[in-house]
Image (cartoon, rainbow, N blue to C red; front, top):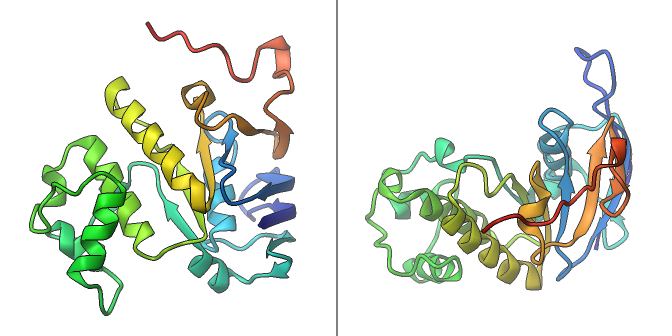
Amino acid sequence: MLDVRDLRYHPATAREPVLRSVSLQLAEGEPRLVAGRSGTGKSTLLELIGGLAEANGGQILWNGESLDNRQRRWLCGLVFQFPERHFLGLSVAQELRLGRRRVSGEAMERVLGQVGLDGVALSHRPERLSGGQQRRLALAVQLLRDPKVLLLDEPTAGLDWTVRDEVLQLLAGLSRDRALLVVTHEPELFRGVIDGGWRLQDGVLQPLGDPAPGGLPTMPPDDRA
């Protein structure tokens, strides 16, 4: 279990803290999401958990053991918003191999199958994949590391409804044997796939079931036709 306790983050250039006192728990098979508007610190939270930034206070533990940033980078797999903008490989195989000394073709085919890309050739250029396929490739890159915790920043951003539904079903499957945390400004899209989580506002987490300011529901009914 991943246990985040009283996490605080106040960059020197900001007047107010980005995160004031954030505590949450993530467990295998229990996907969770953090909802909030743009600029509320959702992406920063993922970077702190994933060991890419240094908090000003608090603890992050895995099964009761405190972890430093390097250990969390091994533990977690982080997929950024619009990950296709960060692709460097000239082929799917090169993208999967980046940063790794030895990766067998069998291992690459296995993770591609996990994300529904088993029909895509390893020689295919990443930029020629569809938007949904590019998101799947970004997931495959992280799954090749076999992370215990998967962190996803706005995984449905910029996708049409059909592709969004495919990605959501993929996430439901990936969450069965690892801890998974999604941050999003559209929590209603995840209804039925990830129902538990929090809303981040003013640097503090509140349960999604609590009413949002002004009496508005945090997860409004799905109004898709």
